[in-house]
Length: 282
Image (cartoon, rainbow, N blue to C red; front, side, top):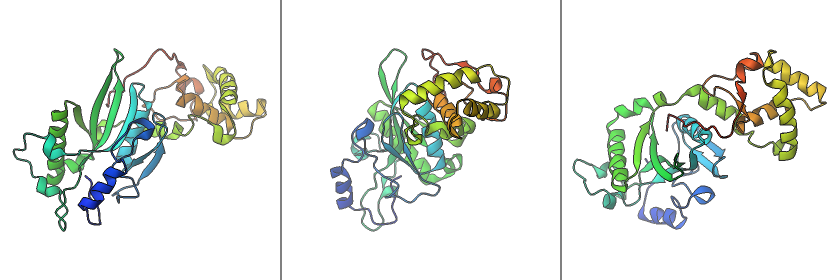
């Protein structure tokens, strides 16, 4: 929900609209709220997205974990966080049993703008685009009356729009997978380490051959590779993460990546880019 510690007014609503919040797609999308606007009950995150090339604003660890899963899913094309349910009272024709007064500023009476956590654009198997909406909530939140009221408004809103909507809780998120993706997420490119794409690809090709089917401890393989190729300390690990982030190596993303295990226990094969898996948690 879009609640603030400060007053919510019609002027503030109009300012958000004029700023283009909740509008655009891809790199041009502006979330309705940013972490500068809204205090969070948990840790907040600013994450530069693979799909969009822009910074995403996430208010809880649970939102961030689901975001990482969306980043990993090949069928996901665009991720719009904190998507506003504009004109909800007009879009929802069946208002029976809904209490919109719960979501108004107590002092000004101005209705808050509810948001759905993620509006996601998918590329389906037949090549068509599909938009789905997902609300991310901790399981414990589902016991609260106000949360349930908000979810019912969202359900009816997206039903009226003809868009598939669902609730994602901590029970739906494979934590090990999300943590793995978080660990390698910043390694999609290695320019911050002074390695352009050509250099990363050249080193990656050598490392890939060294790692695959190697029975030695992965950490030792990486250390030896650096010594043999006169690389700066940490380069091999960075390139290993680069290979994973770009899906050049097959791993079980749902199992914690343990560098102390034999390399051939972690690396399942050389990735075939023609084989794409659908994330079940969507």
